[in-house]
Image 1 (spheres, rainbow, N blue to C red):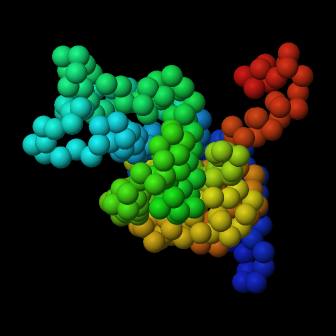
Image 2 (image 1 turned 30 degrees about the vertical axis):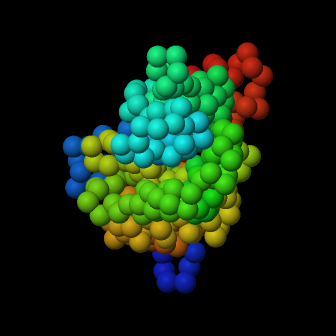
Length: 307
């Protein structure tokens, strides 16, 4: 962890590398008004991707349910209340599960029955594909993350539809408008009421694209996905865009917060420019360990990491 010291006007701040005990003291001082809180920083760093996945999987589940409706319409036509004609009838919905990345979230899937064969239940093609090809769920989640990070909301649902075999022409303007509004609400959430003590920022790779993500931890130790931007932590403009969006949505620079980042100079400079002396920046220990152990022979890498 690097701390700032007082300097005369016009002079570059001097940075000092401090030891583990000094780090602990600095963190306690930074959060003097929350002395009862023990920040789970290492858990945050190790599991921050899980926070991103949790929110994105939840959003993806809602979009998959829309895709299942579109797929059912391709089989049985558009649902009309009270309609009794046709060879296929809509028969409510039922619980189901699909694979999204490493999770199997529950969802509602429509039911279709044929008039012939004593009301035989008909398969929903997209649901069958998602069951048979688990990687499709991961692909859908990745499309959603990229769409959110680039704010290209209108492209999300058609691209998802094409991934699972639904003709893009089947996706109505109403569906696209509804999906865009849902994603805008998701990424426009305000955090004024949250007492965020620390912000973890790092780049993740989604569909061969770099996404810069910010995850916050509040006074209760709960993690919150704060924002996404397409681009790596080395891109100064991307870093500033992400941080400005946090400030605009209630994570202001007026209070002390701990920022945990990788070794990116551009990201650190952006934090110092926008959050000033209230930002206490710590180099992520997990990144540092990986940088070291990846260059060691495998037989001793685990031992060095443990020590």
